[in-house]
Length: 196
Ligand SMILES: N[C@@H](CCC(=O)N[C@@H](CS)C(=O)NCC(=O)O)C(=O)O
Figure 1: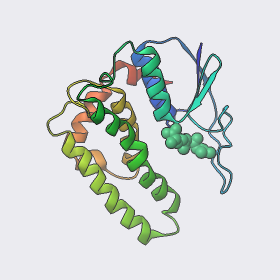
Figure 2 (figure 1 turned 180 degrees about the vertical axis):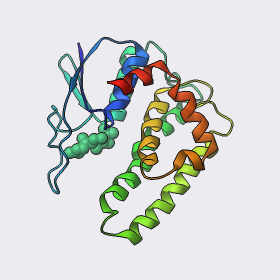
Figure 3 (figure 1 turned 90 degrees about the vertical axis):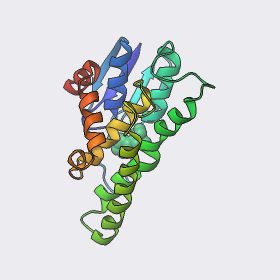
């Protein structure tokens, strides 16, 4: 049985969204988010100390990207990812890892250091803006981030873009991203995940 330790304000939204997209049976344990104290990370009340955490029988797994890849590999029956070895696979992997590898480090740093180091934060915002423009450009000709089909990489990216959005008016500034958000928000699986 799949069990997700969930808090709606966190990256566990990614996993919940995917569980809904795949139509899997799962149980949800809603867990309160404890604001991290300096030097005390991994203190959330989940088996890994962070969100998201998924249990699948004997298996316990953290890291949202790893969980998305694991669930798709194990349960999607070929959906939501280009097959291994296919031409689109490299692009899929790039966009699967871009959100946590490139976007979120800026978001985390801006949120953490905004009150104390405005000059550094301003520089990071500029760099983040360049990364966002790169995403917007990629969406010029594509319906989804890897091409015409919705994949797990969209789940990874969209939730990072929501975090970026919480820092400013991203959607208004980037028309391709705004249209992409509108397309994603019409997906019943996301609507359901956002209600939990
Ligand atoms: N790269 C990790 C980041 C996990 C993460 O930072 N989770 C946050 C909530 S979105 C958290 O649990 N923070 C509390 C902590 O790290 O102690 C992922 O994608 O799962």
